[in-house]
Figure 1: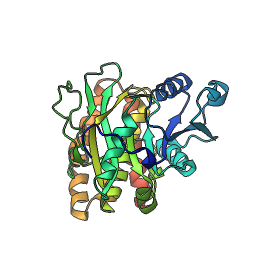
Figure 2 (figure 1 turned 135 degrees about the vertical axis):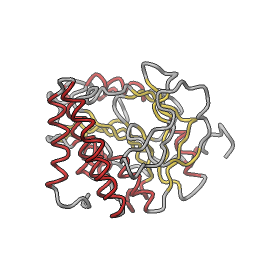
Figure 3 (figure 1 turned 180 degrees about the horizontal axis):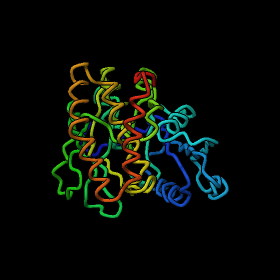
Figure 4 (figure 1 turned 60 degrees about the vertical axis):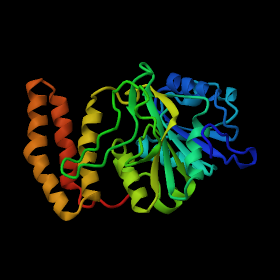
Length: 308
């Protein structure tokens, strides 16, 4: 398919846009408003109201948005459970998992869909993610491989000015949870997000499972999205500290070989834990220190890492 060529009109598959609202009615309203500019003609938007108080329905006039279906959960299911509920309700051939704290660009869906026509191995396509408040700065342009010693994977292009240096499309190691287009056949084969992650590392775990099923993850820089980073959880919240710690260890438990796991445990106990705990104590961030310890303790007291 030539660059810039549109998909033939009869071949527009239904795309289900799945997003979660948790006590962010105004942010979600802005997201829905941005959808009015989409040029792709065949989509639905599923908004999962994740136990918001008051409910989203009481705060937004959803009749303004013809493509929207609201799914209410009376329990906060987290990022994983909320998106799984949305996918369960979705009718599309593709699921666009996207944060509500983003602004959609007009040709986003058109561009994201193109790589699926290039190869049957493409299972997930991600856009270039830039910051809403600094639209010339990159948040995501793909992922480097997971470091199996440290349990970290670094984002390509993170916090770099966008000068076109990451405008080459191609396969990448992990999708970004902020925005990813996933084919239904991938979900049918691999399953949905592992709900025990709840928040953070869930997209890395899902990406690895998708790759293990012999699908590929594609970075499509001609598709861009603007992200209002940290609206949903808050910058350096104790919630973030807990789940980042807990799920970093959980990811490694699920995906390491026994030898890799042993090396990671040694590195974490000898380097990561002392550094973080000392830093939190010396700066008076005792709540973060407790959240960090709770994240470790969860793994010590949870026997199995495998169930989703």
